[in-house]
Length: 253
Image (tube, rainbow, N blue to C red; front, side, top):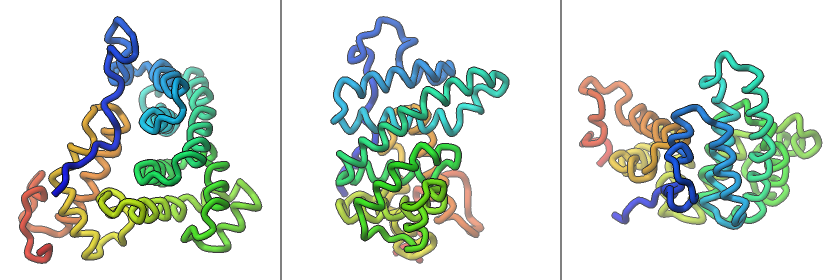
């Protein structure tokens, strides 16, 4: 089996961002809930080279996470929360549009943005223009025709198409790169034998896909582990924490 390629590169090494204090490391900023500084760090890094996919994924996922979940960090500071979301929304919209225009042939971009589209209702409006552009770019998008026309006529209907577009992204990513097991897993029908085999194939490698303890990697890695555990252990009387990694259930053979 080939080695797993991390979804995100380790980012950023302190020497790469030309900072002297640990306070300016991304994961440290997140731990201290300095979310505006974290957003600025990844956004300014992306502006240095907008055609760097790794940097684009960082700014998109950081802004998406802040927009979607910053209220959990700033429960009693609503003014700051509004300002923070106001800063992140335009950057997220910009990164989404640029990504579609320049990286829609990348299986990694498709898999990451498929997760963002299907993961949060709060960030929906930030993806409105990108979703419409995706439907125009890919007329073969596997989505209900009525939903497609509704979205193209009126951006207010974007929400109704998110799951369909996300699933199309997963399938497209797998067609581009059949070796992308993450895309394969998300493109299959949950509960099918192929889906269970995909869960089994990835079960011992989640940590290899998400190698940095940033918020987005904890979110995606945790979600993936839960998905695998739920699929492989559902109804199993022998279940104990983590046993799915070494499970030899006969129906998986």
